[in-house]
Image 1 (cartoon, one colour):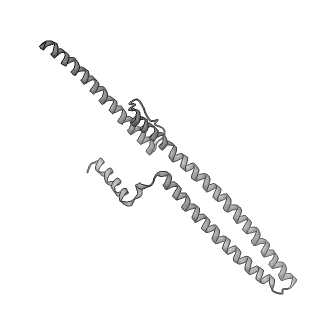
Image 2 (cartoon, rainbow, N blue to C red):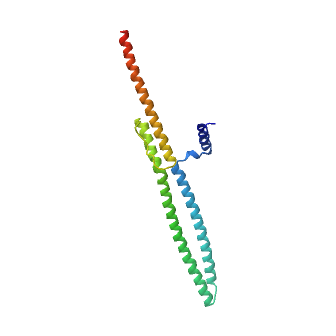
Image 3 (tube, helix red, strand yellow):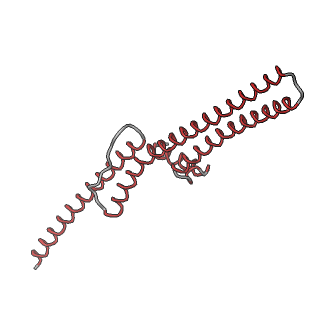
Length: 181
């Protein structure tokens, strides 16, 4: 099996999974949402536990206790309350960090893809055989840009060859017309 057949097989497998139906942006967004949901489920679970502890402490405080026991319960309520505030603060900071990382990921992955799409549209719409994609870095987008540049360069050579051949054909046709006339 040659290299092209192997690649075609992989793409076919991806289509069967339904994986290729979604764009990179959609996949990144879904991943970020999933991470955010997991994050908030953990935060909600911790908040629920904190509320249960507070409810238990309030129930204990409602009982008739000695002044020393009431002081211990009040101290415990204060600690639980400050722990909840810390939990919310850390949770909010974590969410903002997650949002920042997600937006950075979107930009890092979609910006080079946008350049590739723009160059391909320019080639498709204008037939500009002089357009080239910038080749920067060492990743899949660089490989795509290099392959596109090779493709456009090869197409340019073929068009030049066809133009040269048609020019020769016109010249020879004119010469034959002159000879037979």
